[in-house]
Image (tube, rainbow, N blue to C red; front, side, top):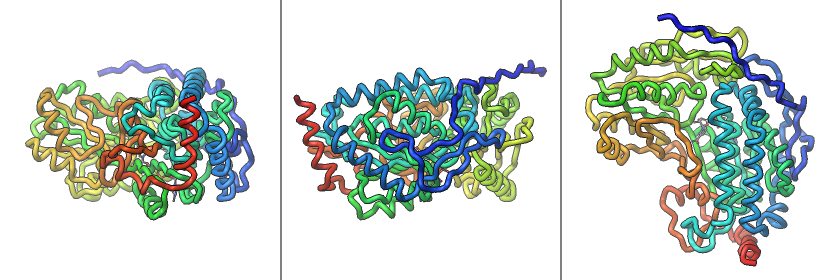
Length: 512
Ligand code: NAD
């Protein structure tokens, strides 16, 4: 079959007005850090975009002190409706600068502009709009009569959805009345710096949000800081485990959003056209750098060959290349280190006996690229069926009965998400009950909404982001028995410290 050639349709980067060097954002100002600087590069071209400050433990200390001051003097005394106005303002400014943010994110992360433009940035705005609406309604969130902010939140995020993860963290924290120090991932700090400009445009009081850039050591200094009341981490299970150990025995509340190895289960009665698109979206969206990616395809044995043939045909039409080109489906892998990890795990898959198929994509000369890949004849014991590859690699297993599908789907240390494809509603409902996954999609995949809680079981972490549950992670509730999924996320909330005492004033201020 002949395909029409697409003419290149690159989004212009001329909308960007980037600085050559970015400092830290502390107490409402850009300031120089006291550490080294490092380059943030475009993973598609390996060209340097800007240099970024590496915050030292001392810089983190200054940022936490700023957040504490802002909490004590301003944010905890402000009415919920006024906090909500700031969140609305931020959401509107994100919308106004949407094109610029989308271009910057694609440039710095390597993901296609189609995704940053249509998914990441609209969801960032949606998250701020949604939590703006909650800021003056905390008493009605079902969390008890007098939910109180925790104090200063230390937040650490990964590189796969840089601005979106920032929004998931900051919006509920501010709505609930906390102040924030956040650390973006070292390879993707750029949009956090643009977001800092938005905070200045929004006139957000100084110190309410502070942004410290740098490597893991900066994150460690932040989460172990004595004067933070809450730690919210999104990243790998290994680092999450380390943070859980460090936070254990302190009064800090903790939520962890970690890795995943989701099963995407396709029954023989599935709406097949939709299912093929859903499988592609499940694992090749964002180059597979998605914690909830449908990286294990469980397909009913009698439709295995049909599904694989159709999948290969579909993958052969995907276009890999310039992330800023509006035709691009598959962008660049975020870093050389991540590319190496994907290659190593894929080679292991082959050496363990799985059968590898790779789409015939033109690989650009510069940058970090990995063509969409499918492994068939995968067994549950193979590393590629157990470990998170975090790349555009799909492992295919088969099943005969629903019971076998459930057993295989749950045969993982993770429990973040799952997908089911079938025409039968009763089967969907029966399966959802038995899948050990925080999110289960039916006849769709990778759908996100700010009103819908997101989070995992087992080694995928604990606590929920999004919806009312996402608020609960930033509030100390009184007279309310938190569901296990929320309370397990926390060390003892009654800190007896500043966070618990100060918000009483907030209530009075709100009542005035
Ligand atoms: P990572 O754990 O290496 O890094 C995440 C963040 O933690 C980065 O900002 C990093 O600098 C920081 N960090 C590293 N060491 C630290 C330490 N000792 N103390 C404090 N902070 C530290 O993960 P990554 O490679 O950036 O991200 C990929 C992982 O994130 C994947 O496993 C993915 O599944 C997971 N993820 C999960 C979700 C979710 O919601 N569950 C969402 C996105 C990504």
